[in-house]
Amino acid sequence: MQYGIIEPPSEMQDIALIITIIFCFILILLAIWFAVNSSLVPAFFSMAGAAFIIWVIFAIKGTFRK
Image (cartoon, rainbow, N blue to C red; front, side):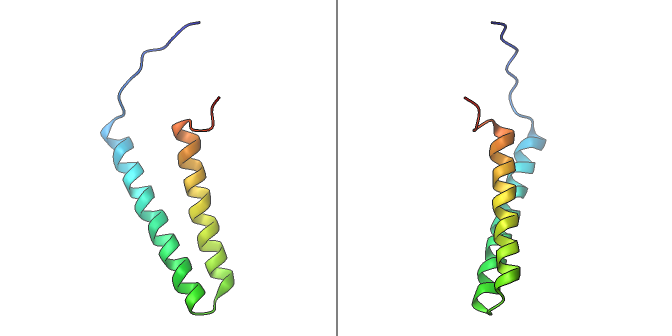
């Protein structure tokens, strides 16, 4: 097996992760607001968008690797 050099994450990766977490939080708040106002279709799309972004973050971080 050949092992590569492990590099620490750059500052841009940390900032991007923080921004995506904030964006997901905003999408979840929008979904709650839409659900309270009886707009279920926009609420569903907001939750689906937040779930997709979270799935992409986990895939990039390598959580699903064996």
